[in-house]
Image (tube, rainbow, N blue to C red):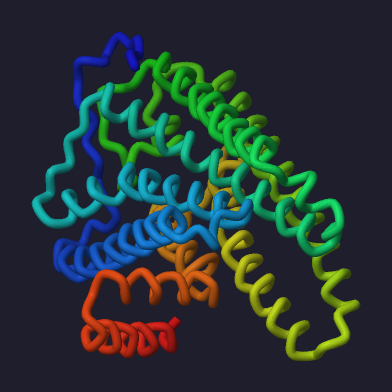
Length: 328
């Protein structure tokens, strides 16, 4: 992927999350832990869904795609953040910065589309159960996921191409912990109106349309849940939907805060803090909320572990797992 810019031979300098050197090691430990949880949780989901035939359903097909996405989404941001915190390797080339921006926006937009697809899948399963098997067949699922990735790539191209054509001033210090849209626009010494308004409209369209349709799906799901006569089943379903909605609202809320505004008077430190939620925290929550709290996934993990490990080790492993589950 090549970008044209008159200053493309110069490096950017990423200032990082905080200016305080004393906080770097504690932050490194915290973010490394979240990073390992994110990668491990999503790899477990991908492995279990692939190996267990009972999980070969549309819902788990979408979940496995979300897990695959989260691995690469996290790998786009967090390793460079950890590198900066530990060894203060803050330089990044122009092409490297634009590539990071492209993949970050691509994976972020694709996640919006996948979350919408997953909400639609749950709407069909709960509100239209008689039509579910015929409507959500293998071909439809592949088309929905394929469309999410294709549109996500196209969404990522637009801001990357606009920003790569900007002229940047002598100061090439990015006041952020990765190559994000707002701090890059702030560095430009040329006319950014066209780039800014185009990215604003794109962000507004993608985020609000996906959020609105996702919330509409959950609205009808809640209406159907209210008609469930069993209190235990109703409370269990509400708990699951509530957890899903919490992750969705955190993700969309922080993204809208950052991108659906042309200019902002918010401080750089506040912007960095908000960015941590959708780049680090949410990818770590997704495997826990969507899958690892799911009884079917836990049962499948146990069956697969029993095939691989001796029974004594398996019992010890799942005793630890129960302790960890109580934390989440």
